[in-house]
Amino acid sequence: MFGSDWLLDGAIMMIERTHRVDNLATDELAAMLAGPEPPLLFDVRTVGEYGKSRIATAVRLDPDTGPDDFATHYGSVIKGRDTVFYCSAGQRSSELIEQVESVCRNAGARSCRNLRGGIFRWYNQGRPVVDASGTTDEIDGYDPVWSVMVERRR
Picture 1 (tube, rainbow, N blue to C red):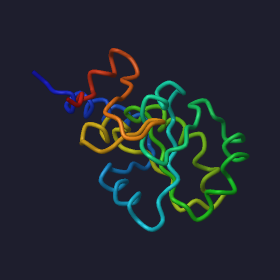
Picture 2 (picture 1 turned 90 degrees about the horizontal axis):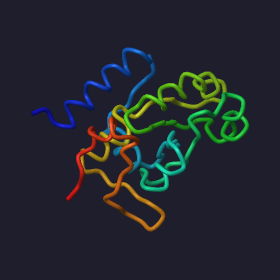
Picture 3 (picture 1 turned 180 degrees about the horizontal axis):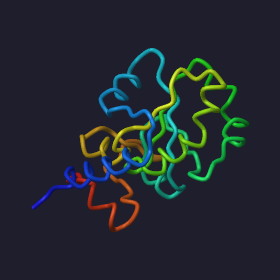
Picture 4 (picture 1 turned 60 degrees about the horizontal axis):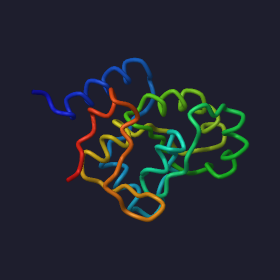
């Protein structure tokens, strides 16, 4: 029987073939978040998914955010900063990066990258997620098809 990591790896491979964006591994993000200049972290999921759990410090960004809205709300704060976008596995965040990458570049962002494998890979590797009350072991699987890529914590 194949595990959730195998399924997630397959999804990542398909996403990366479709979307040519820069990707960042979870260990790289963890190191950046612990460093002196953490990146601006954008969670590109629904309100419900974000409310159930997210990576600490992440700001929710609607998956349908256009470049003009992104520039209006974040253009002045991304100058000189690394920006990292994530969703469940990387599909929605890759799509959004394709829409806002030029905004990031024009505003002087240091980088604009997708978290490879999204919050699913982050969570599956035992990294912490939070909700409004603090650390949680819960995660939203998005839907029954995508949720098989999540290793539930006991």
